[in-house]
Amino acid sequence: MRMSNAMPSTIETTRRTFLRSITGSLVLAPLALQAYGRERRASFLVVSDTHLGRNDDSAAAEQWKRTAAEMAKAAGKLILHLGDIVDGGREPQYAIYKQIRDTINKPVHEIPGNHDPRELFEKHIRKPIDTAVDHDWLRILLVGNARVDSHDGFLSAEQLKWIDEQCAETTAQGRYILICMHVPAHANAHPDRGWYVKPAEGQNTLYEIVTRHQRHILALFHGHFHNGIRGWDDHAPVHEILFPSALYNQDRQLEKQQAPGYNLPEFRPGFTQVTIEEGRMSLRYQVTGGSDVVEKSLDQKQLQ
Image (cartoon, rainbow, N blue to C red; front, side, top):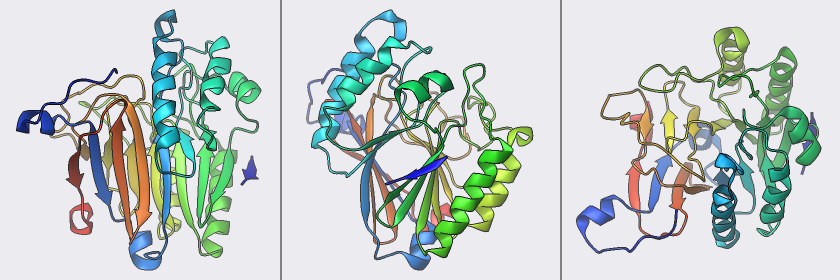
């Protein structure tokens, strides 16, 4: 553990087309920012689940190339990749991923997913896996909590101790924290996927740590689900957010089934622009190849 600094479619100007727009916006108001950090501003990009090599063809790499080209032009000083860089541990795909990644000309910080064997991630991406990145006043904790033999997440005693120490140090400095893990800690039953960090694998201890430092933790960021932007606020004031896949997503009709939390109604592949300012966190989801807008907002009252 260390510290370190789909093809475009024709757009029609109809109400129906507008509601199936190419960009989604979600505005959150973390308590940490409301109480202490309204003057703080940051902007960065989030992408996840690129799955290069899926189906043993070049389609995922081509989609990643298109997405990377758009992220290169988008506002944001750095990029977080939330895991499943390649599909099924296909080692030759890491070189292809990195070649495309390097065309973005922005720092990209990855975590492994359950399709990324730890030894290959360490060989091709970064060692050690668990790393803290400082972005101005924000400390981003990148935690590898996935493994290839399960869809569930896992946090060791050593990882939990490191997270707690990083949170304590950052809090003492008067700064703020973002925790990134591929697999969510949040329990999710049917109609959700049911993949998360189970209590015996560190869930309870993680939430104890989050509760101790909640005034300085903005959110937990995850990938893994391929469900568009999916989130929960029942561990408020800390938000738990799953980000869309850059390759493919599925509409599981979660809101129609009254699943807890929220699911932004956009399921085409893309990336997310995160902007923090005026005590709010804005998530603007950009589908690769498009420009229309649809918005959904959660204010502080709704989150409580």
